[in-house]
Length: 173
Image 1 (cartoon, rainbow, N blue to C red):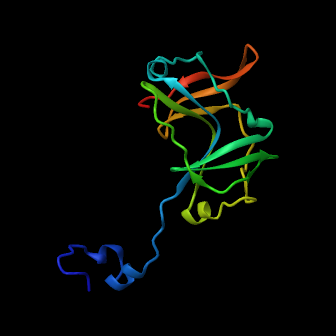
Image 2: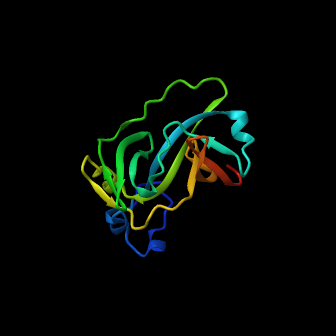
């Protein structure tokens, strides 16, 4: 029987209380972000970014042909590489090293892909693990601040450096 005071009609689920309690629960999927670069930008400059503006990342890697990336899952990071459409985990996950924020600066990341996986799948990602990305990486990169996409961008060369040109702002970011 349900605990006293619990106003739950399990008949709506088509089951007895015991069957409801014993039923397996599906954990919500977790997101694994594949990050090709991170930089810091003054908050006012971030707010003023318009389509056509370019953000230069000191460590951005255009991974369409493969290359090193960082995996982010919540507050954890790991290093990986993309080779021939497959993601290969290189290091174990560890907590993100968060430097104290400088006044009015925010950190933005350049995400080349985002995968949804279960906690068990995420927990199984150890050095040497591989994930088939199932598709080639396109030219579009998502610019992300505090876990939310705020703009779409494309890689461009600016004065010998690789930057990301904003092609669209994402509303309500």
